[in-house]
Image: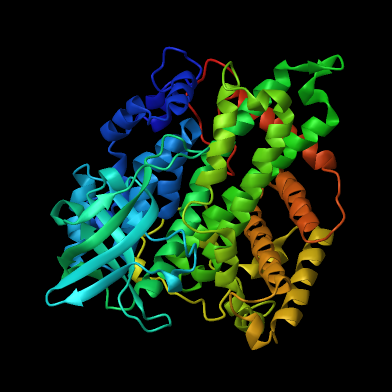
Length: 546
């Protein structure tokens, strides 16, 4: 079977319509990569956004992640503009839609149509409880009035999922989710396109509904369940999207390695300068943390769906934080060349700009922590250092999974956390003691949080507790994955990665040492052998420049 990477061809070939030169030229023009969209059409990528039970190819989240990473390795804008938006819009339908709604949307996506997600409003940001766009019941119809901004693909989407106010009462039951067929809708206006510094070619615009009538059966689920639907559906997208964005960091690291091997400073290649080498190893370690955490969280959607409310929010927070810092670290390796928009490394600055936008997508870091905070006391009392380990399959990253059952996703973890128990599997005694002690400290501080500290209005100190817990979960994911793999390289990267996480949690910085040398040798080997930098390396099509 021909992979997407092979279909895209050699990125360094200047004549390749989907090579780096073409990607950069399209970005400079602010246009989608037409040749790339053609390849994805031919490969029927959209089938991967539709569950297999509805005729598509979506079975498990990590399968989708691997396919989309290939797109992000070549062009993050293509990944967002072509498909990720359709997936974001579709997940609420797979989560809360009835049989007819699911079948209709599946037919549209499989037939080549796009979907868009009209969730947020600029005036309210991530505060879904205050969204003001209305959908009022009038007879057999819903009448939509108001504006949604910053919607990707709104101008070329047939299906749009809309989060709208359906009651005036305050509280969590005042909003609903709708599935709207734009082909049958009138009295709306597409707003002018927004221009952005990252993802320049993404067709980002808004829409104003001016009394637009849609059938009452456009509602997804019961009236007033929009927030619950969003909380359940976002678990899938909060895990999948940052994990997909790792493809862009993979390419950035590959570009930085090429530069570090060619550029000579002080009489030797940049790659031989200790501080530069430590930077490259550190980015590699952070990328492995992101991959391990994302993969474990993705498997939890299938194996522990009642717990993924917390896991998804923690995963998105950690992966986005590490993506941001890792991308900047590579920026410093290239130095002034990070700003160039032409030449062999001109594409780097595009990835740097794109990744800053793509990783955040539809849910902010603050919103992720706000999802965790109300659940901290119950987690502390019921699970931390008390719960047994999760199923072994959680860490067997290359084992098959059943098709994701969206109906099993729950809006609250109810105090269950099976992942943190994996901290006991950390082989390095000092690191194991550090993380278990940190979890014990978190338990003491979170068990009796006062009511005022269990909401989005909590103090900065409580947000910091949620952040620390998210990184502890990332360490646990790494521990479980390494224990399941049990090879020399995994043991090395675990030490480096967990030391870096421990530093974020207040421990003194420690050098990578011998483990870092093992990692650097592996990094060079994968670079020369055209293999990805994931936990499980996958072979890429041979490239003309390395």
